[in-house]
Amino acid sequence: MIDLDSLLAAHDGILLARRLRPLKSSLSRWCRAGRLARLLPGVYVHPASTGDVDTRVRAVCLKVPDAVLCDAVAARFTAWPSAVPQIIEVSTRTRRRPAKGFRFVRRPIPPEDALHRGGIAVTSAALTAVDSASHDKGSRIDDLLRTRRATLEGLASVLQRCPGRVGNRVRRRVLRRSRSHPWSIAEREYHDLFDRHRIRGWVANHPVMIQGRQFWLDIAFPALRVAIEIDGYEHHSSRAAFTEDRARQNALVIAGWRVLRFTWGMLAAPDDIVATVRAAIHPASTRRSSRPG
Image 1 (tube, rainbow, N blue to C red):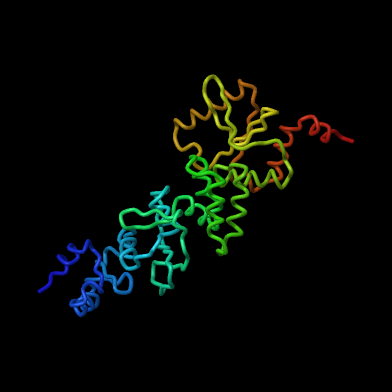
Image 2 (cartoon, rainbow, N blue to C red):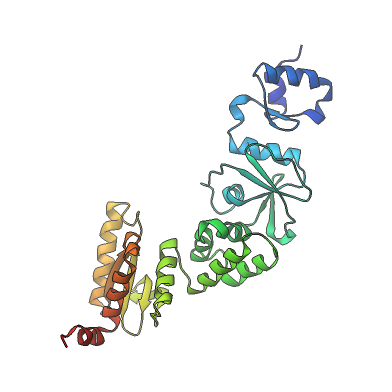
């Protein structure tokens, strides 16, 4: 008599029907009894393993030899190990039937944009970031540019190698915005706001050296020595970060910089932001316009 637990252990927790043809009736019986779960056509696992990402990844790679993992699951295997994909997106050369928890996309992946690791193929970090731009507003692109793991030119080349895809118009727009070098979604929103209101003379993530220390200013008007800092929700995630931020601002002020601080929430009142920035970079004209006629 065949012991199911031993069988699962011998096959690393994943049973392929095509490799176990003599056991076809046993596999069906175990499924009916709730001792096995059908993850994909002809692919069986222990019921407790159906939600495990690594099990689902190994299962689809065993089932589909030409599979290339994309989007969130590819992120998990490249530059974003904390990513938790709800859907396993898979690129294949041929059409595949839909399966719960999986999304199959018929799409060729350029060889230079695929990574192979231990029998698992995934899209590169650059292609994963470009793909994600259609729905994450460029968050992963910002990560790669901020950490110098990619260049804007390289990301543009990745997009050019994948023409005709749904969402490419959005991806191109995100990459164009990336020319101003935003390092976060909040920074992108502020850059867009400044562009819409034709605020000029600024640069993003501007390095300054003060007392032997290098600081990066989120947005700077170098000629006017005006710095704009954009605080995210987790900006002061620790007491040490809070203290360091105050010391940093003091150093900037002593060195002759005027520092404005904005938050994500303040974007709800964009006219106030624009008025404040203009008052800082054009103080004389602001005072004249405010005089009574």
